[in-house]
Length: 166
Image (cartoon, rainbow, N blue to C red):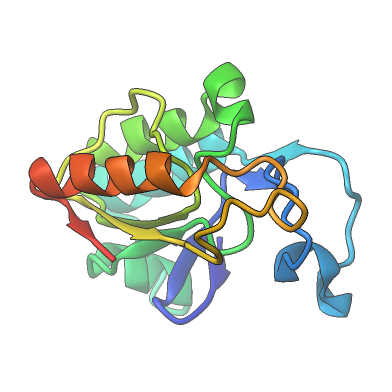
């Protein structure tokens, strides 16, 4: 968990296989870290939610506990895309969604993907922010991102199913 504009941010992966050349998460000096794939600890999230919602343990001096217990929306994908291609194999975002769905957690997903890999998404809980940097399918700057037509179909798919999409 980390604090950002929403104010709860959770990332399921650290690093991203989309490989965008302008990626601030990979190139900002403050974000220096090991460049190999790291995955989120969903068991830790599950323990936190169980403590807050099932056991009633909300530490009032813990900002995160207070935000979660008050139903603030989470932002997933602020530093690494939750629906990048490795999700198909590892399913870490799916695990996060499965855990948070049990507690009615609202999540805004930021993605460049054209799929959610059959995760159990729900228009009552989930919102999408789709990133479009260019419409010319420039693989020199976004080498592993789905083409613009696929992302537009994904946008329509989500909208047609009642999701809020920006």
